[in-house]
Length: 128
Image (cartoon, rainbow, N blue to C red; front, side, top):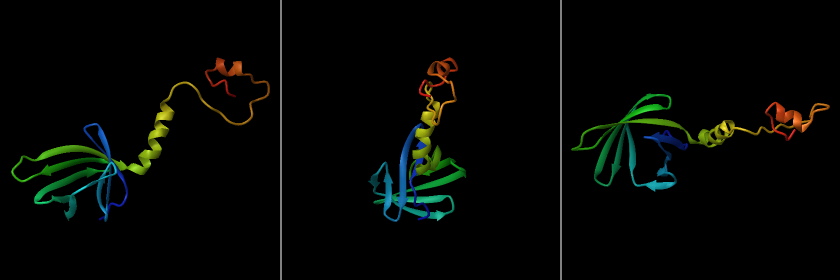
C-alpha cells in the first residue's frame, strides 16, 4: 500500500478520517472489512466477502472525482476533497482561531505610557 497516513476525506459536506495501511482500512478509527487492490494507476478494486466494487479516481491535488462501479448497478460519480488529516488537525483550530472576532492577545512589554484605555480606543485587547 502506498498510503500510510491518515487522510481527511470530505464527500457531500461530511468529513471522515480514513487510514489505509498494511493493517487494513479504518474510517474514523473503526475497522472496515474491505480489501483494496490497486489494479492500475487511479483504479482500485474493493472486495468484501463475495462483493466487488471498482473505484476509478481522477483529479489533481485534493480535488478528486471518484466513479464507483458495482456489478448490476449504474455507476455513481462522487466529488471528493482529500487532504492530509495531520495537517487538518493543526490547520483547523488555527483557522477557527483566526476567524474569531474580538480579542487579540499580545506579548511583550507595552510601549511607555500606554494604557489599557488606549488599547480599547484602537480596538485591541485591553490585556496589553
